[in-house]
Length: 624
Image 1 (cartoon, helix red, strand yellow):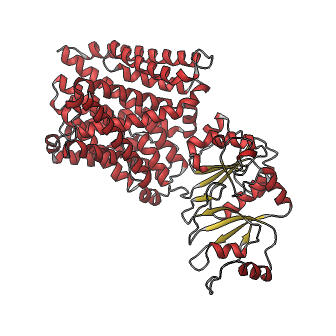
Image 2 (cartoon, rainbow, N blue to C red; image 1 turned 90 degrees about the horizontal axis):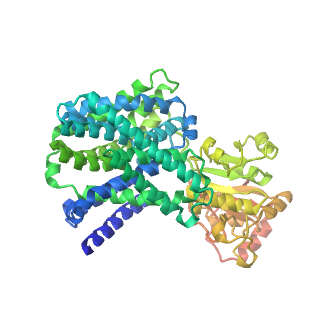
Image 3 (cartoon, helix red, strand yellow; image 1 turned 30 degrees about the vertical axis):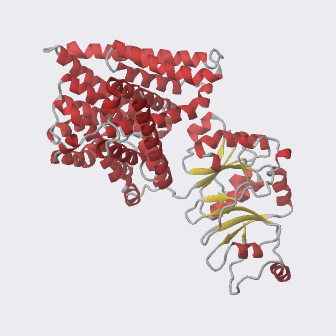
């Protein structure tokens, strides 16, 4: 037991450590986890998962895969899917069977796998993996339509890949147990079992959707009850038919996502944390379980199979599926190239590889190694070329981080105009058509709707916006908006007009608010009053010869610094709690009185400071 506890701790450290390094460096997390597990297992022999956990390894991986698929199902909101056009539906309705067929042919004729293993493996290969696709799209800034199609294809195809694997495995299992059984003897029971499992998953989702809003389950038990129900549905469905539990939990997740259960919003952060832990743990265990003998079995034909998967199977699947669609050809070609695989592929392969060995199919043992090869090759091929291909095919979106502003006021409109002049994407959101009238007249992009309404989440693409500023005339509402978006955008990227760091005079605790704009903590009334006095936004470019202190000297003495805009487009705000470090190339955006100081005032101010080296000069601040 002590050895198992040590291995579990090691797996946790390696998995979460790899995820952290990926966050800091921007490298693909899945590749770092593969490297960490491979070093811990085959290279240094720190632990062997099969030896450590024995018979527990298979059910551990099975439960982990079930929870990952359930979490993926919870991400599939069909209302959002409607806004992606017919591209996603075609890639599901036509792409899944075509991809399965072409993948099976490549696995059999090119990789040399036996038909049962080739068919099962090709079914799993229809999965592209949102855990890889979404970060890739976020980093590369692809246009909205192709990015949306790739994102939803990855989310929707996750359960279909699992379903394809279940169908294939069950068919070959029953065929092996009952030699001579025809298709009609095998397929109808499978379909019936899948329907029963799906109904069980739907019934469990309906029970949760009924009980949670009515207070039948206390708040502190909602997460345990939900995950216990998922595990129970998985186990019971497997009693109906082997691996039918994967179908049941996927249906349960999709059903819950579309039943408008408002109380589920509070558990989203926790279920995503569980998914990260499970993804890390399963990936480390599977990669640590590889051995050099299996890797030596990786023949040259497997390399040809990877090339066929990249250059034949995926392009043929996408181009045939999108024939006659409204998707332009340049976007079709982009979609035909981008298809990185992720954790679900490896997890499902790891689960079924053990089962195929039990059925006597020798090629099952190489599925884990081959799945890792597919993951690494697709991530490298697509991750390092996505920007190049997007530029060549003219599907590259705006690469600069955008600013989302809650509240249409004269101050926010002036800020939006200033940021637009600095080539920063901006969107003002307000529920009042009347308050948006000045924004419309000024030509500022806007969205008419309640930012906290779930419909806004479905209709407004939040992907381009990496910073939120809440600046309505209600500071409590601003805090509510910041608190709601902190999880999605990041606590360090939500800001509001509000109080200073004086805790005695704060109307709301800091844990419920966004970061306060300006070092002085200007409130809504403060900026409105100053704007009526003629205060304006000014921008000042820093250089090696014109630093931050020089900029301060040229600006009016009562100027308040709002942000630094890096050359990359990244926004760093001055707040009561943090002051970013200015550097050459930055643009300072400040909120200043209408008139600059006279030369005599500048000279007097310089005399009050330490002498500076001469020869420095710079541009005068430009008002908005």
